[in-house]
Length: 211
Ligand code: ATP
Image (cartoon, rainbow, N blue to C red; front, side):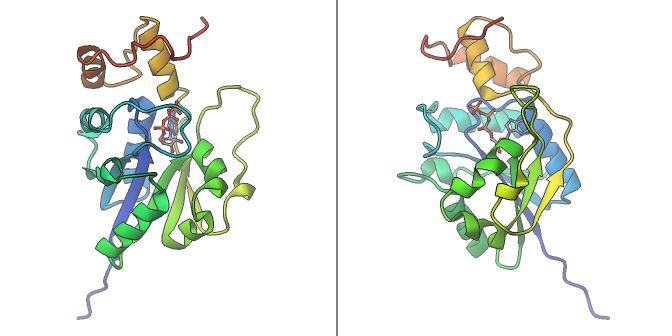
């Protein structure tokens, strides 16, 4: 009897994860379940070219990602971008994983804000040729902001990930910590402990929260 070969489904979820928060974890869980992934590679970025500020050290963001995503099934923490010298581009990672796992179906997991900016990424038009774009809604900082404009995506195949909008962002968490405000519920308890033990986000140059 002929055995039907099934393509391995490999999710790629990159982010600064500075720090990883409950929106990231919810997105990872939804992606694994809805996209029927065999593995979800979590990739903390290097000093990403599109982030204006200097990120927390890579090894600390990796440690927090381990704590945040450790209980999500099928997750693999992939540290290649943190270790890569120079600017780090998603397209390079996709090409590498494609070489490592020939025949696998790659799925790039991103929030709607990143999806809208995708046309500005390195080799943007190449990305949908390598990976299915898998896009989750993201709550808007301004409630009457328009919905994600998918017409700006490079042409190719994309699919939505169903996720109730979580308004949390890493920016908000850094600001809360700097202002001495609680972050319970916004990050996992283990990540909150790590932030406290390593005195992260205490600097005075992070944006303030107006409350
Ligand atoms: P910052 O506030 O520092 O810009 P961030 O909260 O946007 O950080 P990133 O690490 O830049 O977090 O995000 C990694 C990925 O997770 C991106 O694709 C982003 O769109 C997505 N993402 C982040 N927060 C959410 C959220 N609350 N809901 C859905 N997707 C999210």
